[in-house]
Length: 114
Image 1 (spheres, one colour):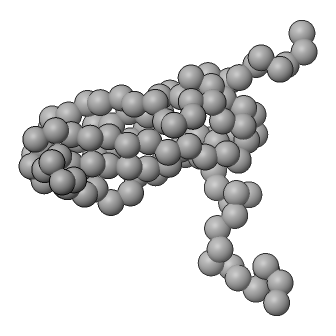
Image 2 (cartoon, rainbow, N blue to C red; image 1 turned 60 degrees about the horizontal axis):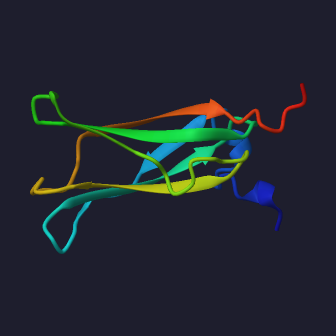
C-alpha cells in the first residue's frame, strides 16, 4: 500500500511555508498552575535562529489578560526541525482555553557565503 492511498496523512509539503506554532491542551499541574505546552516547526525552507514564542490569553470578554514570551528548547531550527515550549501561568486557576500563539525569529545566515 503506497502513501498516496492515505490522503489524511499530513506531510510537510502540504504545510504552509512558515514557522508553525501549535499549542496542545492546557492542564493544571500539581501546584495548581495552568500549563500550556506546544511545538514550533520550521517549514520555511531555511534555517532560523533566535526563536521566541509569544502567548496571549484572553478573558471571556476577549480582552487580553496575560502576555508571556518563552524560548523553545532549541531556539535554532533547520528546515523541517521541531522544538517544544511550555508556558506556566502561576495561580491562573483554570486551564488556558482562549489564547493566541505566535513567534518571532531571524534567518540563520551564519552558513551563507558572502
